[in-house]
Image 1 (cartoon, one colour):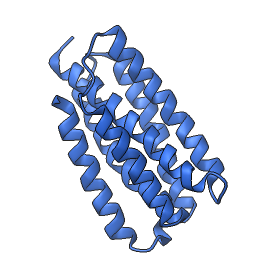
Image 2 (image 1 turned 90 degrees about the horizontal axis):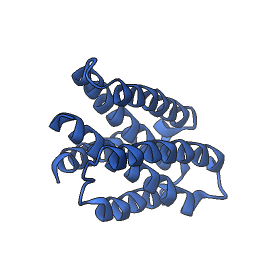
Image 3 (image 1 turned 180 degrees about the horizontal axis):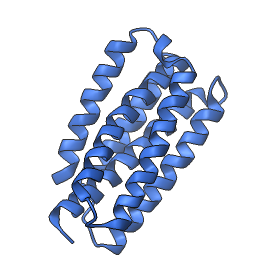
Image 4 (image 1 turned 60 degrees about the vertical axis):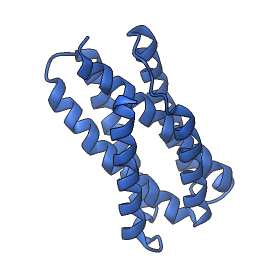
Length: 169
């Protein structure tokens, strides 16, 4: 297994862990409110992604990022804060995260080529589901969130930073 594949598994595991935490934070605030069913559905898919990458971490003996405790707190806080701003802001958070992850997964798919069919298949399937999450968030008023452009820009920047850090640490 190449160092690149190890890096991909490490960072994707971290990202799915963070995503599960974001939805946990959003559901802690909006669990009985608007869009709770959509949030639970997306959280369940993120948990399935996390379970898949956890399995790859274990089977392939890839060291997970040392920053999982940081991503646990940061993810939950991001989810809770955006939900506290309102359901549309929670959906705007989803758009920002999923658009960033779409680009991230697309780059990984291209880099893998035919080198690791199992990993590439997982990334391809998960990428399609992430795009579905983005579309769900857009259909549920994400773009009507107060300060949508600023909010999504800040979240995208944070997500890209977390990706770069988690690849190696």
